[in-house]
Image (cartoon, rainbow, N blue to C red; front, top):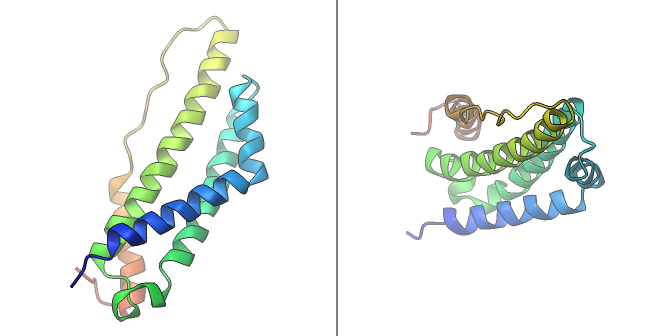
Length: 141
């Protein structure tokens, strides 16, 4: 049996990237941040917009006709959901870092922004719930 996950993730990631490029909110917030005009509140808006793009890409990519037996198994969830959310996490961190650095510079502060650890356990909990729903209540591992 062929490993469908690499091609599946590639499609999901391409869909996500396309959605992000077309999303006027995302592009507007990115533009503001790059000009040094972004705010802390806008980081949250950016994260939410990216999350919406990711959710739509996953919803489209993980449809039953794209999956073996029409189900999301753990090996599929872990190799599609986690990498996509890691990408979203990196993009949000990059914007947060840009905004914080600009704010600090205006205030004469020269501390490098700190990066929080990727919430692996939280993502795995979400994956587990998705797998359970897909498999009808089993853990799917």
